[in-house]
Length: 479
Ligand SMILES: Cc1cc2nc3c(=O)[nH]c(=O)nc-3n(C[C@H](O)[C@H](O)[C@H](O)COP(=O)(O)OP(=O)(O)OC[C@H]3O[C@@H](n4cnc5c(N)ncnc54)[C@H](O)[C@@H]3O)c2cc1C
Image 1: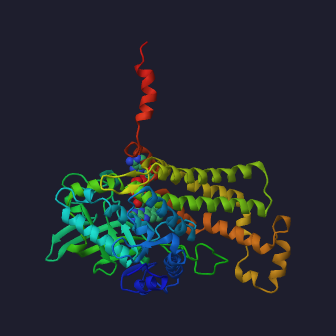
Image 2 (image 1 turned 180 degrees about the horizontal axis):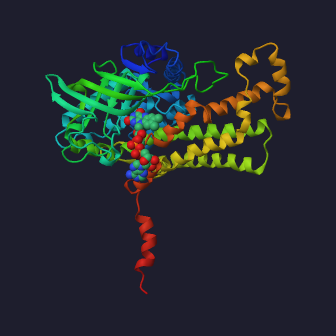
C-alpha cells in the first residue's frame, strides 16, 4: 500500500483501543472534542506528503510504491540530505510543536532496520530478521506508531533501570505457544491516542540478572490488556482565533499499563536478551533520530524568533533590551540550524552501510535545548507583558457593539489593525504561556533526557582527540 492519506489515517484510528482521558474511556478518538483537533492535524500531515510528493515521497526500494521519505534507510550523504528536506516540511506543519508526528518513529525504525549487525548479536539473529520485516510492513502500511522506552519511576534511589524482581517495570512473565506474555508499565507514550501500534524498544542499559526486562516489540493499540492513561488534556477545542495552536497540536502523552499482554512472536525483536538490548541504543540510534528532532527544534526556534519580531513591531518596542532578547532567540535558532547542517556535512557510515548525521553537534544541541526552550518562553512572555492578555476572544470580536470599540481602542503601533495585534498576542500566549505551552516546555526539557544527563554523557558522543592534543602540547613539552 502506498503512503496513506489523512482520511485513511483517521479511518485506522477508529479501531478499538483502551484510551482514558480525564476520567473517561474514549470510544472514538477521531470525534472526541479533546482529541479531534490533533487527530485532524495529524491527518493533514499525512495529506501534506501527497501535496508535497516531490519532497516527502519516494519509491519503496522493493515494490516501487510511493512511501514516505521518513521510512528511508539512508545509504549515503545524499539520502540524509533528502530525508532532511522531508523532515523539515513535516516540522513546519506544526511549527515544531508536535514532537512525535509519525516521522519520528519512521526515522527510528529505519535506523534500526539499517543496523541488523547490532540487533542480531548474542543469538538474536531471528529477532533482527523480524525487526527488518516489521520495518517493511511499517513503511508500506504507513501506520502511525507511539513508543515507550522509559522505565517507570518509583524509587529514584534504585537507579534508572529495573533490577531483578522489580514488579512495576515492563517485564516478561511467560512464554506462550505463539509468543510471550508481558506485564508492568512504561512511561510516557506521546501520540498514544493517535497511533495504530505501540513500539517498545531499549533505552537505559539494564544491569545483570535483569533479562526479563530486556524486551523490544510492536503491538497493535487494540492488543487485549493494553491500557493508556492520558495526562490532562490541554487541547482547547474552541476556534483557531482564540487558540491557534492548542486547538490542534495537543499530541497527548500517556502512561502505559501492560496488564498481561500477549506479544506474538513475529512482533518480538528482543526476547529477554540483555546483550542485544544494551547494544541497540549505544551508537547510531542517537544521531539517526536526532536529525528529526533537531530539524523540528530549528523550525520551532525560527517560529519563536518570528513571534518575537512580530510582537515587538506590534507595539513598536524598539528599546535595546527587547531587541537584545529577540536577538537571543535568533542566536539559538541560528546555532541549531548550524549544528544540524554541520552534523549533515560530517555525516558518517556505520558498518552495516547505514548513514547518519554526526553525533557531536546533535548531542551538544540535545544538551542545550532543554535550557534554551524555557528561556525562549521566558523571553516571549517578558516582551509580551500584559499585552498577551489584552486579547478579546472571537466571540467578543464578532459582537456588533464591541467590535467598533475594539477596533478603536486596541490597535497596534503604526496603525496596525486591532485584529492583527490581537492575533499576534494570542499566538504568543498559546505558544509560550498557556496550558499546552507548559506541557511543551516540559517536553523540551525531558523528551530525550534532561540537560544535565546529556552533558554528563557527552564523551559517549564525541571525539576528544583534538582537545587532548591541544592540552598535551603543554603537559608533555620538555621544561
Ligand atoms: C512531555 C513528555 C513526553 C514524553 N514522551 C515520551 C515518549 O513518547 N516515549 C517515551 O518513552 N518517553 C517519553 N517521555 C519520557 C522521557 O523520555 C523521560 O521523562 C526522560 O527520559 C527523563 O527521564 P526521567 O523522567 O527519569 O528524568 P531524570 O533524567 O531523572 O531527570 C529528572 C531530574 O533529575 C536530574 N537528574 C537525574 N539523574 C541525573 C543524573 N544522573 N545526572 C544529572 N542530573 C540528573 C535531572 O537534571 C532532572 O532535573 C516523555 C516525557 C515528557 C515530559
